[in-house]
Length: 133
Ligand SMILES: [Zn+2]
Image (cartoon, rainbow, N blue to C red; front, side):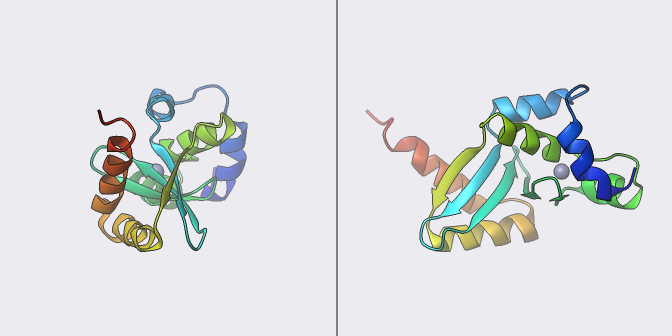
């Protein structure tokens, strides 16, 4: 199966869903960043110490995708793409609205560093507002 059939595979996946894809959906690791000013949108998969840029059904910036999906063609998709597809279908994508500057910083940090401090700061700020006593 070539990486070009990722879309077909991901849209047809219903059984044999990797447990960690289900777990990722439960833990709301699939994020949709929306910039408040420019309305740009960006899917990011956030894990504990790595973040990945996702284009649903098309691309993930993880090593598994790069090596096993694109180069070796040994699998049709990484679990981040499967989790993203599930989250979209089930309406469980976590939307995070951010300012334009933060949006740009998150994009560059995820692409070039594979980890975004800005994203964590934004999420921490959101978690602290409204729930503080
Ligand atoms: Zn991936």
